[in-house]
Length: 96
Image (cartoon, rainbow, N blue to C red):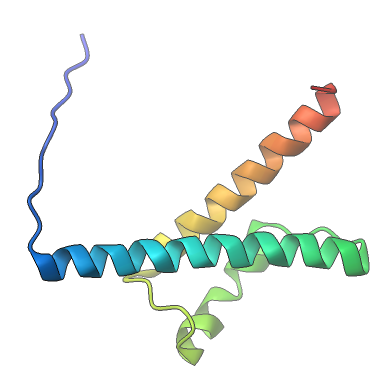
């Protein structure tokens, strides 16, 4: 038997604003990673993967263009992009 627990949170207004900002930042990173993969393929006919993009994160944090709370959040966003691409190409390969 699997037990689950549901927790409700009641954030304050500053917490809501902070979390909304983090969500916007994650969405922006996702879209930028997606755009980079598409652009590199269109221009160079080269495929880039998760590790290529993940290696760019420290420089982005240092330049200040990435302000997510921790590196794990940014890596998770890039993993989702990679997983999405893998699923897309698996469907293409199957002919679906």
